[in-house]
Length: 351
Image 1 (cartoon, helix red, strand yellow):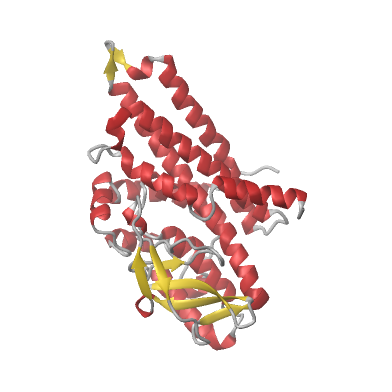
Image 2 (tube, one colour):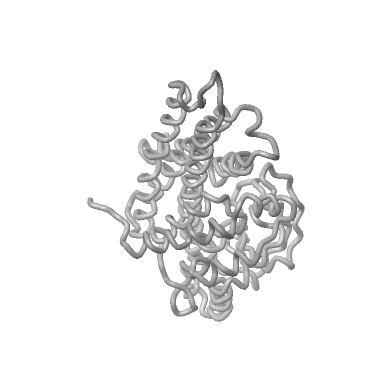
């Protein structure tokens, strides 16, 4: 199979890169650490560009595009450690709601309203963890809309959508406070339910796959940013009268991290293609992508910190802003080990 992004996809990515370079600087990240917010002027700018509503159907004001179109933009979001909930809102909530719009005619109008609000950037969403997971919900603090799962009376999974002010959220401390973690307490009702049974099960699986690939795309951007920071520092930091980047050991460290990143990138792109085209092995592809990207980002963080030395973890150094996000996302929606287990299970079957 020959695969390449289109000129339009590349141009869109470049435009978003330019905007984020101005709108999401390291000073902005430090401000976000101090006061995490769901919707900011930066969120409104992304909505105007069509980024937030990219996966919302055109009938509801979005672009009606797929994960393959979004994956490059998520990579750019990772490159600047974007604090806003782009993955939860655009990669997860919007396509999930769009897919369920016709499942319950009585809720179609409400679902359409949510999609229209997402497309305009009027709301930001949080998507709860998978059924059975005890992990807190990313973005729960201050989210306008929450997509949550719960077992139904018959034990089968259900998907519910509730407003953020209709639930109780207990904040959970995070290494990266911009993720706004929280444990959500709420009461499922018939009025909040948007899907149940096999429909809900299929939607949950699809969302888990999208979450793995979307998070992997962010990790690619984070890895590239950290490697660039380390390389830049290696050119400036002097030791024994020469830049430390001139030493072979430092070159090998950076090269090894770059190799991991370059191996992970096509795997993530391929998984996005697999999900959009609903191939038989899309779940396996998503797991491989998350495992590769998690490994690449963790290695990039390790190498970048080693090149910087202890200063790399201080508040004054920009590197820690990206390392903390990388470490958090490497574990989010399944660690590399979790996804390798899923790949193995898909290959050998139940034992």
